[in-house]
Image (cartoon, rainbow over all chains, first blue to last red; front, side, top):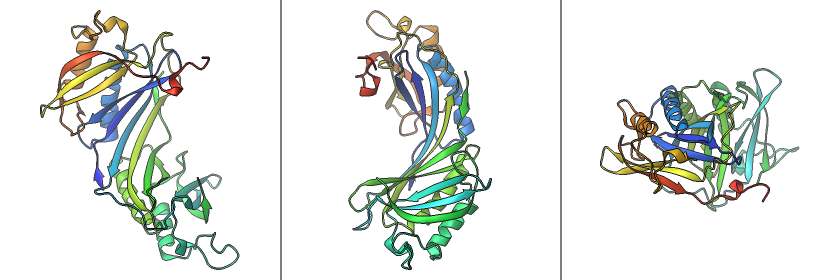
Length: 156
Length: 165
């Protein structure tokens, strides 16, 4: 994958409740703190030029494919692999979904054949280890600790 | 009246299946995670997910968001469709642009041009083009000067139409 330059987005709220965005490219792959500091300076300058108010700031790093590609014939984004994890506080969960889960990652043993994901499969075990060992967390920043369950689901 | 960060930064992975349809997977990392570390983690989980799917991971974005938890009140007559359009020269002699939503009327000349002698505009240009500035065109060339600046109106999107119309 190729790294695009980071984008800074500043969103502004007007008197009718509508939001408009201003976007600007950042010159190199700078750290968030550096962009954040420059954004604050820019936002202060912009605020004197607009009668809308700043309500949101986003800093986005984007990776894009080097060439056009598609999934295998028969792959289907709605065939979702859903992985539920327990977080380190023992009370909250996190969900990670993998579109077009491979059929051969589903268990063939009843009950749950064709629905439950085979958590003894080597690739599944590796994925779960990556998730648990990495910096991943739920939306409230509680670290992911262990896998609770994993199954196939149709998600539109 | 100040921007506060969300608890996490978001990794949004894009998948494409055999029909060309796009799917997504959203994964969070703590907001304090450095971008370089988050990108390393994204590459690791992307590789692990690639072994589980027969779609293809075509890319991802990493977004750090802040929002104002007590925003000020915008001027009653302010409208984001009323843009201040700024056309900039970059260091490789190309151009780039951005717009300021709801540009102040007091910055405009009778023709709709933005008054480049106005102190606030001079200050903005200094922030965008000054030494150490990090703002650039899409190819990464530094923004070096302002070419044109004028008022321009955007068509209202459906969501921007009055709710009581």
